[in-house]
Amino acid sequence: MGVLTALAILAGLIVVHEAGHFLAARWQGIRVSGFSIGFGPPLLQLRRDGVLYALRLIPLGGFVSFPDDEEDSPVPADDPDLLRNRPLPQRALVIAAGVLANFLLAWTVLVAQGVFVGIPDGFQSSPGVLVSSVQPAQAAALGGLRGGDRILGLQGASLGGGQPAVGTLVEAIRTAPGQELRLEIERDGQRLPLVLTPQAMGGIGRIGAQLQPSGREVYRRPRGPLEPIREANRDFRVLTARTAEGFVSLATHFGETASQVSGPVKIVAMGASLAREGGGSLFVFTALISINLAVLNALPLPLLDGGQFVLLLLEGLRGRPLPERFQMAFLQSGFVFLVGLSVLLIVRDTSQLPAVQQLLSR
Image 1: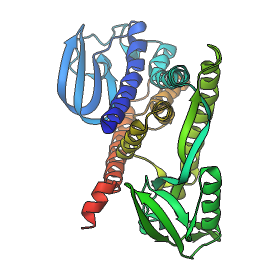
Image 2: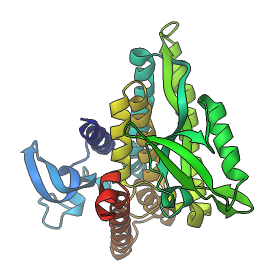
Image 3: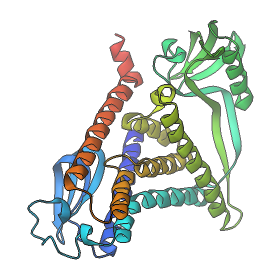
Image 4: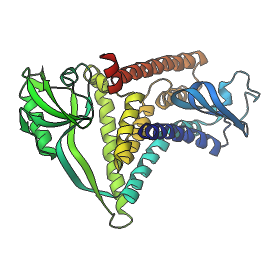
């Protein structure tokens, strides 16, 4: 059920994003010809009120199509309700509506967390340090550590729990580049010994794993109807800032951060794990992925909403539409890049799943 929940969340976020474009167009009386989830040949389709709704084979996003894009469209080219014949502000709203819809959904989910789950009120720790993710080809992965493991002991001594345990382990790793560290971990209810050798980076030991306290968040009932909104506002600002910082770091330090980029398989795996845990984690996961989807689509890359906005801006500065051949080349290059990147991430993330790694190691 965890995987199905995560898949349903991702599908829902895509539907919300595309619904933003769709509703913004219909609200302004702009003609829409299609609403699709996924790419490629349709698996299911329904035509209603002149719009073809379709669920397609390749689940890597979705799109809203307009008669403007169809060579055999029966709609006259000078129809005032075609998207390309509308003023720039109206077209800009259609393009921006998907990003705005994802931001609004993220904020709404955070408010819902405060209402239905409660307001975070501390952390109830359990023994050990939780390994939330492991980077490939780094010391942690080479030593056999996996995401989901719980580190209970270091050099024969118990680590304890909470943030102090994380601090103790991190400090031991930082001060031991090239030296063996003996760990005791818990995996699937069994205790196992592991030996890791932190890699030296700038004279500091690194293992390439994300560590966090083991335990669970404690929640309390909100003190009044406005507290969930105030808490959602704070969390929304923090998550959006961290997401933006992450994309900036990826752009400026690509070689160091590229391995941390998550594809759809890893995102589903993370969501499935959080779904099994229950509580408020799934709300934060939904909000975070929705914010990531919004920020990603706002980037000025071909085929994304940000790229479409760049074309619209250039048209406004130029005073007339850009040559159609240039627009097609721009969009096609983006399609090849995004599909290629998606396939690469899917293959990489699938190969890192514990079940797949066990099969490959036989």
